[in-house]
Length: 235
Picture 1 (cartoon, rainbow, N blue to C red):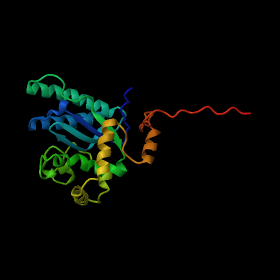
Picture 2: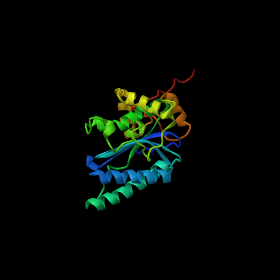
Picture 3: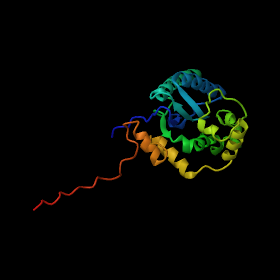
Picture 4: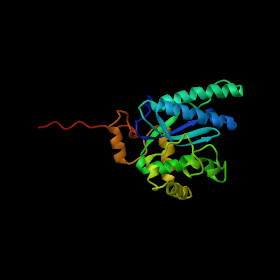
């Protein structure tokens, strides 16, 4: 079966995940994390990719981004992969692949799911039991959104600004949301759909996307197609 082309729509929110080969660490110490942050900052700016939220985990990373052009995401991620792998392999005296194949991504309906997407990404260290308080994890954008620092990598999404009229209002509202559990259906949907490249959103959103791409946006029906019987001859 032919592999579907990557879904990339300029101006839309995308969730991106890239994992280490065989789930091996891709960040071994603070220098590795800092290098990835620096590479992301440079390449996303140069390729027109706005980063709204991110987390760098020991063996993978997540991004919520908006590309300005159809090829912005692929160009940035390909350059990032090549640059970081060369640096990492040289620094740690290793050779060979670092990433588990190509990165995974899909489009998410921002108006409906941006905040849940941010919580999914930024609370990852807490779910993985790496920290007791996700705000203390240094390799994510959560501290930025809680007003605990300014992250030059982050461009706040307009939907985040809808949480309040002032930075304090937005930060307080987001902190309250982060304290609440994530919807399990959203978690399952974003994980599965990112892996397979299906968009996450309402039927109306997917219909609107279909007018901007020739790529198939929904799964084909499972099973063999029904056989259509010949119509009876007319008398």
